Amino acid sequence: MAEAIIKVKNELGSDAVILQTRRVRRGGFLGIGSKVYIEVTAMNDEHKNEPGSSQPHTVIANESSLQLKAELTDIKQTLKSVSEKLSSVHTLGKFPEPFEGIHMKLMELGLKFSEATSIVEKMSQNMTPLEAMDDEKISGALKMHFYGIVKTQRVAFTVPQKIVFVGPTGVGKTTTLAKIAAMLRIKEKLPLTILTLDTYRIAAAQQLKTYADIMHMPFKVVYTPQEAEEVSSNTKESLILVDTAGRSQKDEMKIGEISAYVRAIKPEVVFLTIDATKKRSDVEDVISRFASIAPTHIILTKIDETSSILGIMTSLGASKIPLSFVTNGQNVPEDIMYADELDISTLIVKEVLAK
Figure 1 (cartoon, rainbow, N blue to C red):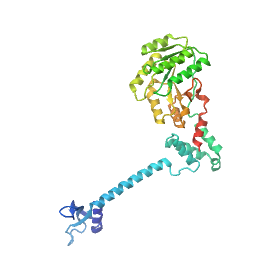
Figure 2: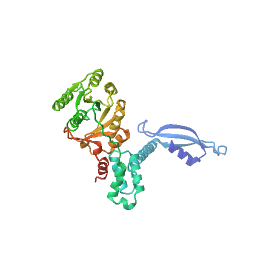
Figure 3: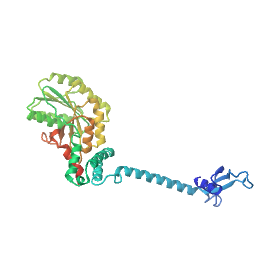
Figure 4: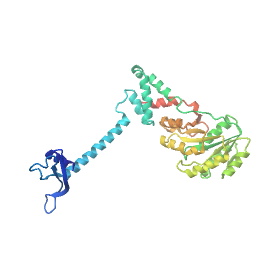
């Protein structure tokens, strides 16, 4: 139709009036091999009263050519869309080097486009071209930006006190609890009692019981919120560490069950245990879903198994929940440290500037 209208305008001018359009078949033999055309009947409105102008004019356009044009239009739109996406990711050289390379690396390590752009814009505006050539200056500027990216806070362990460990499946809650128990027992000489609410995995309860027996600590499995409240309320002479069953952040019903136990126990500290190997979006989802339990501190596990901590530290910082412990292995009790002992900004800078 577009091709036919162009022909009409070329032959009758822009004031032409279209009277009729229809599809017709032409050519072929007995309808076989025929082609579809668009037939447009039009006349020039401006000169319709002049002699010889009353006869309508008919033009014909081949429909196959119109289909080709439509396909070419779709291709152009697709290419335009791809080009826009590429330009948003690569910024088409928006920053001079080394800032463009830093911008790209920040996004590779888990930052959003806007976050990476904001950091690099500030750096490029505050540094002279000569300073940008100095690796130490670049490193210092990055470290300054990432300093305090996440709040760290030590828990003041005292007696009596109730501490609950929550988090998704497979993050290492039980092992982490054992590490903290050993640290408090051996270094702080605190009396401890271990409770577990994890009645779904027999191995988890047995693992904790083994640790408790080795360290000569009372151990008990509780099965209901009422029992958990009773045991925790009657234990006044020790610090209580409570292990819970791992629950997917997508399972709201199971998280609700854990929340009922936490309300019954009334702990002073609730550790949300997060796996450092997870995607940033998954970590943010975990923090959001477990917010109903009101975690007071975060423990980040498995940092020895991840290639980058930038994205996850950004998410933890945005949550405003302080990071208390970091674990970097399976050994009990060695592979755990207070988060404030970890130079987070230096680790991130090394990731960003790694060749």
